[in-house]
Amino acid sequence: MHAGNTKFHIGDWIVHAFYGIGEIIDQQKMKLSGRAQTFFTVKLKDGKYWISKEKSKASYIRPLASKKEIAAMLQVMKEAPQPLPKQYRSRKKQILESIETGSLMHQAQLIRDLHARRISNKLSFENENWLTKLKKQFIYEWSLASGRKKSALKRELEDVLKASAIKSKEK
Image (cartoon, rainbow, N blue to C red; front, top):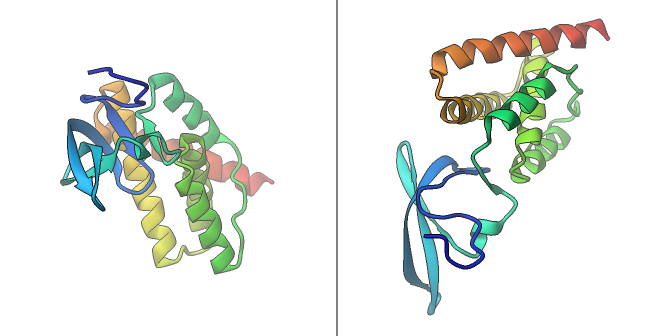
């Protein structure tokens, strides 16, 4: 079903910056505000959502990462972490802006930097939730891209983040 210049198609796996990873399972026309539009139905592990075909080209939605992209992100996570702003509001703004880009690179940097902050300072409840969500999403995406079990990938990710945190202490 590759019609027009649509970025995604039925059967594609996508990553939404806030909803997470899902598979496009259907395409249908619906009326919204009196205007007929085409929507993709995206199935998540525990639900589904609809996104207009027009919005499927937004920067906060991207295709599932390849093995090569995952490997590059793991390299980013191995680098020395960058400090996050000390002030809560500034830190929250940076985190949300980073997530909204939908960029896997920004996600990897954020996981690395939040993990390092967790070691040196206690994370706020909200920051802890973001770190947990981002790590779970990364592991799930890595599992889909590689065909490997999430439990093994979780251990591997923790080893990468520990190595990165050590570089932070060496600075």
